[in-house]
Length: 358
Ligand code: NAD
Ligand code: IPM
Ligand code: MN
Image 1 (tube, protein in one colour):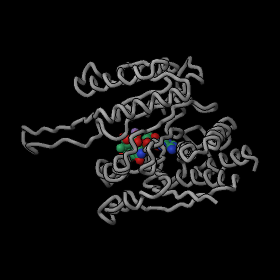
Image 2: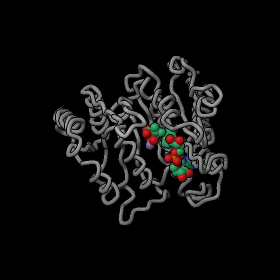
Image 3: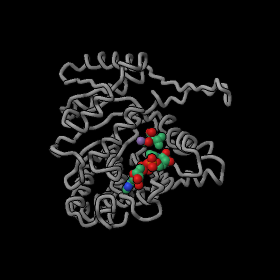
Image 4: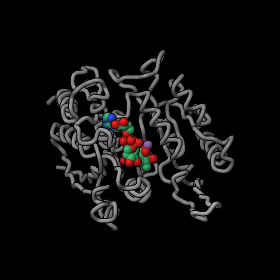
């Protein structure tokens, strides 16, 4: 029997709750298939670990993770540890250290999911963000000068490399080719006179290599407006690290909320493990109350299945989330229901087992 080794970093706040439900659904698929199973290794890294050990993960954390088939992560960050420490020393360290340069974030409005937009067809909210995940505004380069003086100032440097831009844009066009979709680049060349002018130039070069794929471009401010007023324009969207971060929370808002927004941090070459996580954070406001919606984590688990080559199972998992939404009986509070995290996870599993013939 094939065994997949999964590293689990449940993390902080609602992370452990939602991860447990993602694992339930993964096991449901494995049990039904019978030809493979998952072996989970749990790493207690996160803010509590930091308060105990003085670091977010062991010094050789990446070395420990490098031979796993995938990483499944909940959420990182909690009051008591500064966010720029907790996130940069765990989540961002893994993304960068494992060269997970593609952040795949689907924005798709499932049937039964709430949507605040008026006059929009459900099918029009169906796009995939390809967010650059290794450099750009998140390079971490910069400095703090003349601290505490009236001349105090900081630099936060965006780093955009030719290699980094070419590979993310190529990934976007290849995905569009596979799906028969268009590619839209989101940038800001009118104000960011080096980084985004460079981004646009490389987008034009890449688009020229794919003459059959429709290519569009928007400035990020206009893109935000179009996402709300006319989301049907967008199919594959390629954008920088920071713009992708912001626009995918907007994407979550139009596609059912943070409880439904999933993401995959992918190293396409397979040189390092890829990491799957909901895009929401640790939600301290609802942590420990059983109120977190596990659907985003479950959707991320479906991306993990896709990544391992089980795309049909991945698709069935999303269908099962949709079944649960349409049935409307076991939904968490932010969806207007009163089910707990684990009751919602059980409901998705029930639909999944039925779909898989179990
Ligand atoms: P958040 O995503 O944790 O929460 C924003 C809002 O969405 C809150 O009202 C929360 O209750 C709600 N929400 C989020 N996930 C939900 C779910 N599954 N079900 C129901 N409601 C949900 O963002 P924040 O409050 O800005 O950040 C909290 C902490 O998480 C910070 O430390 C932040 O840095 C961190 N963070 C981590 C990640 C990550 O690990 N990938 C992502 C974003 C934020
Ligand atoms: C996300 C998060 C992270 C990001 C933070 C927590 C560093 O917001 O995954 O969207 O900005 O990438
Ligand atoms: Mn974010």
